[in-house]
Image (cartoon, rainbow, N blue to C red; front, top):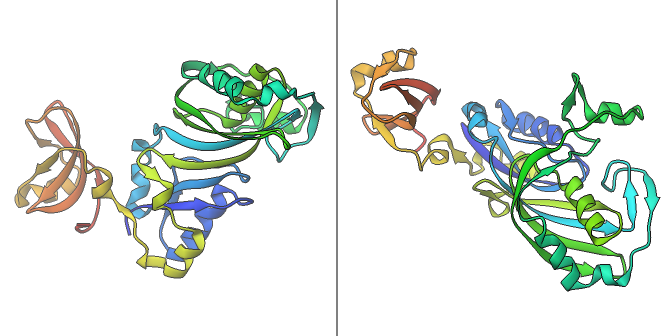
Length: 290
């Protein structure tokens, strides 16, 4: 099994927990393309076997989330896992649909965002959450992000909660976005629920539970390496050039620079990269995945 399995991660487990359980279930090398917080649910692509070599092509994927903010309360971690550090009044006007939609629209486009202190970003060789757990403060520089779309899903005035959907670039922190939205509404808030519904082309509709994977093991459907690169052009190499290619020899190939699907006698071999009219192997699978 070489490719990607889409898992619908449940609450109260880490991405590492899911990787461990998947590896134990199918007996293959397993990795992932980006963590989800323990409290978060949703799309977690798992890279299986030779699929782990595809990670460099997947790290810049945009994402879609369904998010819930609880207003009037601030926590030290900016989510429901943290300790309450501040409370503030929430006026009825802050929970009016027109006002919320107006504020959400102000986040559209390219901007800079300051990551939360409870994150894995490193400053001076240490992760931010390591400083936070010791009560230490360090300067956190804003990072460029982009919000492609954002829209209101619902309002619970009794619980002072807002639900919204956001389509954003890699590196966008939902906890920071929730705090910033609350601030522009004139109060404070924290992220009280998070569900990731899409990562690049991988959607929640494709996802299976970790329990289903454990039960079905090798029988579950997955995205093959060939399918993952289906939008890339293909190159056919003759059989006598196959072994040198597999051995790492660069083949002369008068094609534009880029990533290609490589075939020999119509069988998918793997992924190659053309640079300056030379084709070099990148990801090799052992047999056809058609």
